[in-house]
Length: 221
Length: 342
Image (cartoon, rainbow over the protein chains, first blue to last red):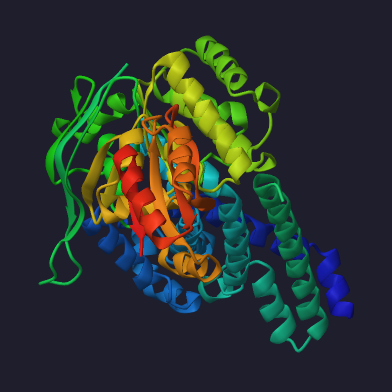
């Protein structure tokens, strides 16, 4: 308990919270954008899509299926060489954010695809029948029509990324997960562990609430 | 004012599996839809009518044959060129296919944005269209706040936005109740009458054909089995499919099981008379029967208007002495088209 008060007062908790939020926000921003592009490409190139292209679909689908199931802690190790090439280092915050972004991209791609597939083919057909080209149909019909469920997908992804950040310590990153392991678990101090857990729960709840509000507004139910 | 010609049009899909035979959805169909005509294509589910309609605006590519919409040869144009042609071909759908994420006005505006119409002109046109379909006050509503009939009226406004010469209607009233369905059909009639827009509508309901169409094509298994003036097709159906459709819109000849019931209850001879556009003098028919001492009751049938001309069939029970009835039937056969139901 004393230990917890010390950690709270010397700013360690605050620092860890800011770190976690930084990781998640950057990974969700970059991975969210890349995942959206990839997810839209998966949706439109599949059979019956507005840019149906079997070759592209098969390749993208394979990539997503290849990277998505890799457990995050193993992915950190597996793509460390790639991290060195792209961000110049295999350890620390930058490497961690790279791997988080990488994982978020493929995870979000699938979520975006699944949610865009719920858009009725009829509205896409209507857009085509009015003379809209594929790009216009994607940007002004497909994405806006599927946005409600897609936002819920992003909320889900945000929480998954928070989960992933707990592994930060493996390559020298920080954050609440690392704090819980380093100061709580390893020092036999459940107070610290649970304080970190509570903070994570608060973050997750707030994001879920925000996601639900936005989705409800978009879905108008 | 646009004429639509489909000449020997076929659409085949590759069968599933390596050696599967191709599926023929549309099989050598020829339809010439005159400028300003309302042409109905009727058929059961899977008859190929929906596919045929999608060949007209190039949403799907015909395998064989030619399709001309006005001067544009749809079957000869690449997708990129088809886009501008589609601005001249409106389309409405059974499930309306409105954009849920957009308000009513934005739905109607969409094809105008696609066509590159300037914003001020778009605004004016949207107001004009919503006024035409009677939904001016719903301009700021979302589509899920509308009833089915209102949704289809938005669909019609949207389809008319770019002043198309042709309107394709894909089962446009099938999701609506009979009253709303009639209102939507009346609106389509107005569209046709006021703007001279050619309408091609597909349906599985003979009632729709009777209500609105000038000419009709009956499709079965991808083929056009019968074609012509709605009145002619109604009053003198040639194919089995057409007869079944006509029977759904009119209580003409009793169906087999109904005939058995009628026979249970009526001991006299049952004959069926066809009345077509005043070519039968009804008083003469009844006088002939009375003069020959034969009693009559009307047991089945009906007379209705098809394209402003009357048509129908009545099944009569002739009561009386066998010989008198025989003579009466012979006499009636001189006057009218008569069938003895045995």
